[in-house]
Length: 210
Image (cartoon, rainbow, N blue to C red; front, side):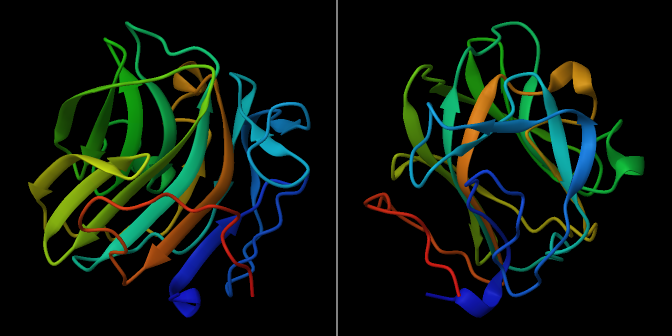
């Protein structure tokens, strides 16, 4: 559903090919991210960011004040309990340092999940699990930002921030110091649609491609 609203879809099968209608070209943000054929959720491989680097993409993140969804499968190898490690950052590079006009998902002391949302930080009490695949989603619908893990909502708050920066980084946070020790599979961004508002059953297969 809502295939025409998808602005980034990375399957991770040993390729950085974007399957969205935008057909974006990704570039290396830092390091040398690669693929794993031994640890994967679907298909032949998963995107391997285990502290090796991050990738950037140029468009599709300018959500404005509207609805959006970012959903993905994640596998944390280890989760640092003292330093922020980021899964992705939606912003242009000039905004990374002060976390303005962006969305970022990361793990922090605990380890638990946290978010940056346009300059403010949202802490949660949701623990991070290592060594297994989890479906995760961040979705804004009608002015409320919600986060889900394996289909269970663990964050829900009012949010109408104007996210007007178009670009993003996956597998890391604004500095290589904070790159995630994680793998990702089936990473998808949907602009204009908040797919999830309540608990749901995680997908039973890869996201559909065009």
